[in-house]
Length: 199
Image (cartoon, rainbow, N blue to C red; front, side):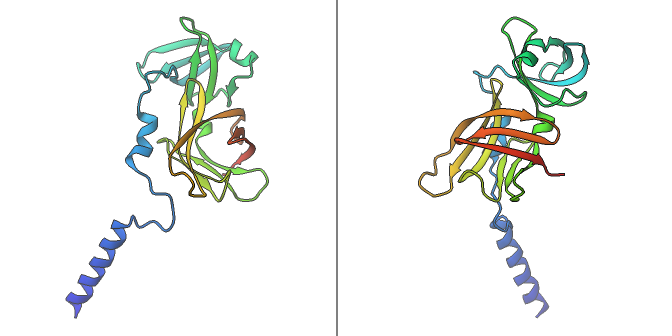
């Protein structure tokens, strides 16, 4: 009898593991997490870890080469293209003017990643994982998010439609409006969204 019970328990555990053991959550694939890690030859984004801010200059470490870089952030500030606070030890995605040390856009990835809930207190929102996976919390824009990445200084979200009319994954540019440690405003899928940080 004990042997039969042990066999049935093992069989049940194996079946649950094969199904992913996930009660309704999004199933991640290796491709989802690999999107962010995969280099795009057309992408000019520079990933840095900020060391310090000296006036209008950023001192940072290039995460690809480990070299120290000093970049001017005057133009990006003037054009409203700095998204997030300039905080030492945070990671940033930057674009620069070709052949110059001038920042065009800066996105604080350390602040962008994580859980964001809609300001309307509906409980709906988004989660942006460090590995490039993205997901919807509740419902939002009638889509299912799959992944996110930065391409040439722009936030990109990939998704499939919720209504089942098209299972082809679509990638769309997000227009960032504001980013801080506790607020995110953006336009996506022809809608504007204001989020607050879920702490």
